[in-house]
Image (cartoon, helix red, strand yellow):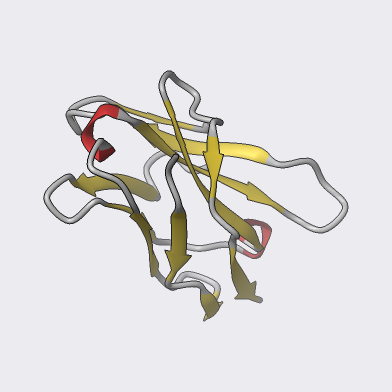
Amino acid sequence: QVQLVESGGGLVQTGGSLRLSCAASGRTFRTYVMGWFRQAPGKEREFVGSIMGSGGRTYYADSVKGRFTISRDNARNTVYLEMSSLKPEDTAVYYCAAGSSHPPNDYWGQGTQVTVSS
């Protein structure tokens, strides 16, 4: 069982930056694929990006490539999502996820709100 807790969301202006964090419980963090998803009002949850257990390989949705960066610190059981050049369409609840394969969907956090004002 893995518990995930996101933090770092908030209100930011268009063009601004935010860093989300996701702290995971458990001693097997490094074995999990970690990822971020988001859900905007009235829309389905969508994949944002993911990172393999070793931290080497990353995947991104086309909509965030070049603007968002995923990283992880296995010593701290934490995964990060660095977001820059934010746009109003990035407004959503962002969820952290963990799983045994890509895309990860076995465990979910409670979500953190990101709002980008125009």
